[in-house]
Every structure is written in structure tokens, then in C-alpha cells.
Amino acid sequence: MAVKDPFLEEALERLIHLVGDSAFDATDEEIREEMLDAGEDPKESADRLRAKMREAAERGRRHRLKVLRKRWKRSVARIESADYRLPETPAERLDLLYMVVDAEPVLRQQITVQHKDLKELSDADVSRYLRQLAELGALDDLYDEDEPGGDGEE
Image (cartoon, rainbow, N blue to C red; front, side, top):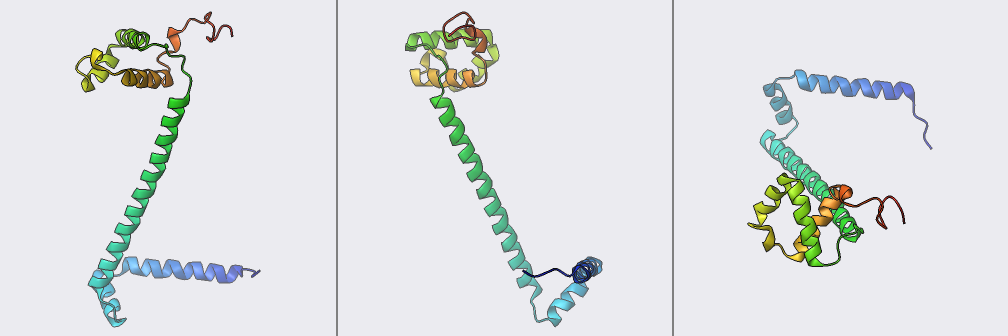
């Protein structure tokens, strides 16, 4: 295992800052001349740098999208597998949705944006909406605490 020399590390850090500062202080023409003296084509270097930056940005975007997609899939799986004590029959589930929507008119607007009338909803849609509402806590107040399975008794 190599032991770091604090003096050498400090000298290297100062050198890096000086080189960085000189690059910031240099004019575009001075930088261009240095590149030409070193045998580099400034346009090709700029194009390579732009391409690398685009690739890095795209990798970052894909990574964020992948993370968000995984998070979304976990959330959907959790919502679909959770027991929200929804009514057993499609008619009872639709009645529950009507009751919640009547209590919260804003929900009716949001749901009817996709469906002209709540009666057009399939049972799968009704169940999905009820699960989402339950996940958000919108159904918590609808259950009597004295009912079996409620907060009052088991």
C-alpha cells in the first residue's frame, strides 16, 4: 500500500488550480493557438467534447428513467397486491366509487376527463380507482372503526 506524500499532494493540487486558472484567464484565441501548436484541430476537439457531453447527458437521462420505471413498477405492484377491504361485488365497488366521488367533486372531474360518464367505467377501472384512492387515504374515513377489520376490533 502506497503512503501519500502530503507535500506532493498539495503541490499537485496547486498545479491543477494554476492550470485551471490559466485556462479561464486565457482568451479564445490563445487557447486556439495552444491547441494548433500541440497539433490539435480545435473544431474536432469541440465536436468530440460536444458528443461526449451529449452521450453523458443521454446516459444520465436513461439511468433516471430506469430508476423511475423501477420505482413505478414497485408502487404499482404494492398497490395491486395490498388488501384495501374493497367491496366484493362490482355493483358495491361502483357504489363506493360514487360515494367517494360525491364527497369529493374534484375527483369526479378528474375521473370523468377520461370517461364521459362514471357508468362507462369497467369493473377493472373502478377497482383500480378505488385502490388508488385507498392508497392515498381517501377511503380511510369510510370504514366504521367498530366494523371487523376496522381500527376498532379484529
